[in-house]
Image 1 (cartoon, rainbow, N blue to C red):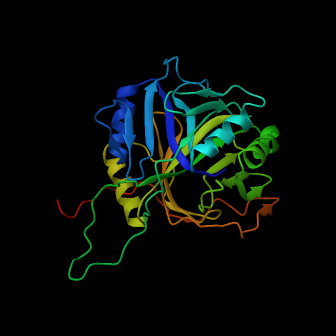
Image 2 (image 1 turned 30 degrees about the vertical axis):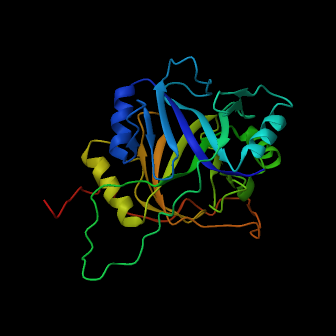
Amino acid sequence: MKIQRVESIVYGVEDLDTGLRFFKDWGVKPVESAKGVFTMASGQTIVLKPASDPSLPKAPDQGSTVREVIWGVDNAQSLEELKKELGRDREVKVDTDGTLHSMDDCGFGIGFRVSKGPSPSAAAGPKSMNKPFDPPRSATPVRMGHVVYSIARKDQQKAADFYTKRLQFRMTDHTGDLGDFMRCNGSNDHHNLFFLLYPNRPAFHHVAFEVRDFDEIIFGGQNMKSKGWNADSAPGRHILGSNLFWYFSNPCGGNVEYFADMDQMDDNFQTRNWEKTPGYAMWTLDKSDIPAVDRRA
């Protein structure tokens, strides 16, 4: 059984029009045949539904938030194994398209379906001869890389056991004071899932979108700020995971992150255990209020 990646993330949104405008500005592509659905080159989807939609699972936090994370698996056999495993002690619903729906041990909605394929690389290619660097002044994320939830400290071990023992996630970094970084057993990303022990209650925290490099993070962030959206951090580089980042507040719930250049791990990597986290970032820019400047204007 292999879980490969985040396949889809489903929001329950109180102000749908604002949410639609936000994700269009974020750089993901609307699916014209399905209002409220966005996609990327990876085939992964973001789905926005009214918060009152009765088809949505309940969430521990209130208001606009993520109501379900659907994970992509490698094949139909893995899907059947997950159905059997989860069905031992909880309800598992099955859609007509074969998608499984259930709940994890912390009260978050989870789903599973066969993945549409591997995610494309976002790495920057070689520079072209005789073509000065002149990138777009916005971002086009190629894939979703990871999701983050806040949980109560008392639930740290329960959450880790559910995902590592029952869903076969790999623990990359365990920190006693910050939380647990885990990766799908079919992924080499440092983490696809992070359970954060702050602010000591269950809630959705953020979803991360991979872009090519730091330039695209900065141009994407500049574009978002120029359209009135609020940054929730300065740009920087994390310590655990090593990824470059810039976070923005999301009216659909929690935050979104542009990220690039994350550490890659395989099964030869040994879990690191930290009594105290080594820190948030290797560096951050002194000012998050970076002006939006377009030299082509």
